[in-house]
Length: 224
Image (cartoon, rainbow, N blue to C red; front, side, top):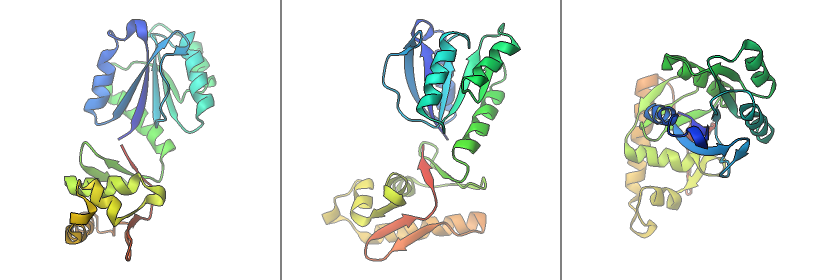
């Protein structure tokens, strides 16, 4: 799943509240940012995708899209247009940096399709750890459900420099003090996770032992 920055007009926030709920129900992490015209009222946190929902694409929508694109060349941007806005207005949104500039679709499956396309661009080779859904997704679209301890292990690796973590860091991720940590629990967790992935996909998990140190996930992985 994705980390989504949802930019909404402060004067329309109640009317537009359903979108944030839908995205969260899909498992996305949503960071809501209110805007007063072209001014963002809170600092912007980095995300995979930004959705700009200002009631219409032109005007403040254009300006906010340009600001977001200048801040990040990588981030996917969906600028939501009003139903009545013309094709030329929507093209203007694309010219200002949006990946898509369309009206809110009546069928939400289409919104999910927009998000999937942008995710393939912003993280084309990354593994994705869906923390809330307890699922590990490979770049090749294989996916395996995992338990809470396996989630904690992979999240610690995803959030660590070069996706490597020592045993003390992993113990804390498990909610245990290093002094009282039973390393056999970690070894069993790693062994079970590797076996689970191999049995489900017929492939090896890129989880390498750093002898005497800890573990490393040898490919790009992001937790969301």
